[in-house]
Image (tube, rainbow, N blue to C red; front, side, top):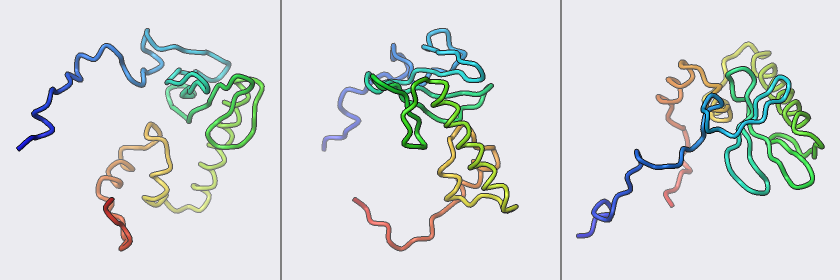
Length: 139
């Protein structure tokens, strides 16, 4: 019997290429703009950047040949800072609308948050969460 593990295993610990470098990594490609830090992730067109304010990642923006865009609206921005501000404003409105109800977000709402933005309590809730659906089908 052939096991997929019997094939040559890649040595993931010694990979010369790091994935998702933090903004503090000296090898990270970073663009500093007032109030934001953009860290290059991948791509040629569009280039994908993670957007940080202070030490928190708020989302991603994309550098196209002729414009910038973010992951939350359909607007084409002329500058990276405008795309980052649009993303930040959207995230702030989303946060306010969630907390305005006075109820904690549901587990389904937590799936929509960036993983860097989850608290340890929210992680614990997600670890224990079991979806209540009868319509899941194995592919």
